[in-house]
Length: 301
Length: 262
Image (cartoon, rainbow over all chains, first blue to last red; front, side, top):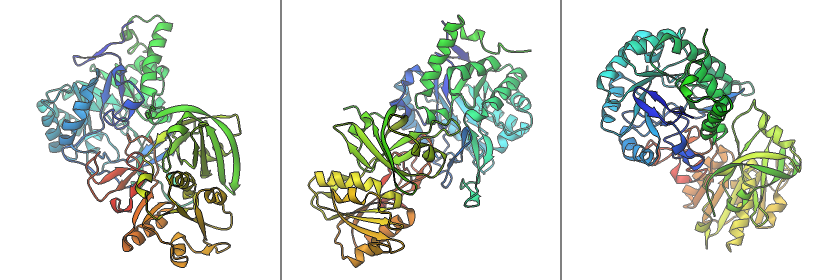
């Protein structure tokens, strides 16, 4: 059985990754799962300088999912290079660093500082709904996405994944803009902007008022968008949104994803990533699938 | 002994209502062997509409028998579901989480424990551990009214003063009113309760030169330090994100009151 997938020349032992922001740099969930079993660890977003993030409350539960407005709290690239990368290098898994910024210059500074680092790919977060200073605009207007992708591609030494926002009218247009600007892959979906109101206090539950929704309740939206994006572009698509099991992951692969990421479900089941790997293998055994590539995009008109 | 965090199935041993909306549940789990005062577990509701573990503090442990006691208030769907569990039921738990109170630092000191409302339960295990370590312990328990849940449990391990908001029994007022009225001597305070109480304790302990350890709470998602949902402002740069934000679930929930901006 072959579970290996290749994205932009990088070979992953299996298509299971962690969704940025739900897994830190692997230290916390390394107590629960064997990181060597994962295709890749995608880190929490890292900026050029430390970011304090948003005020609390930052998280809220909603029907079948959750809202978060962490605001990309992170220690900045210098600490990250000294601490998080060496930690991840102890494991036999690929390292994808999620990069965030408020201006194009911020992103480019992080990308440059990562140029000599032993990381396999970069994922560019242009779609966080919880940071006000304009980062989201890069991910919501096709021409802005094209522009920032082009600039990052000029500087980046590693293959670049653009992480797309679902909070757009036409996901296919966004995927095409990323591809046209030279992106090596796209990942989707980031969280869907939501809101929760406490009817007893008559107030917003989150200090940030709005937050990004994740969890099983958003999975059908994510599958649909992965399907649309993968039919719009030739570059690989990495799918995520509510994945809890091997079956969920297979659904994304069939819709056209070349790899998948487990996000909010880590909080629900800290063993989720490893269980998704096992679940994919069980499915392949059951249907006698020799090579996982047979499944990618197998459901089409 | 293996200290790794785990998610596992525990068996409910007993459940009873101590006061309106306050429930007392004993569960059987090997986590009891490595659980200490001030730490907490995450309890998962079965209803798949609700996904996240509910952080609930440890009220008491029986390490030999592998039994753990949680006393919690029903607040939403999850805790209301827990209140319906009966002996023999199973529940999924995540633990042991958080850092706990520094019991060793209390050695030879006049340590006063302060619990307010649903902050009272962790004081039972804390009083027990302190007594076992040879300390004489005073607890001041602040209640809303005369439903004095866990008072008898506290009296097994400590001298107990009671404050009630409505004055129906004990000293009318809060835990600090008791300090004044009963002239209680303290050179260390360990406390858990609502934020206004903790703020008042921080101010009181600073003014009186008393070391205070306080247990904080915040809305949590992962409970293990990954999501950065439950942070509090800190005086110094935190070791994780270097931005003066400690993670309550892993760096806390117990902090030196002087280290956190509350």
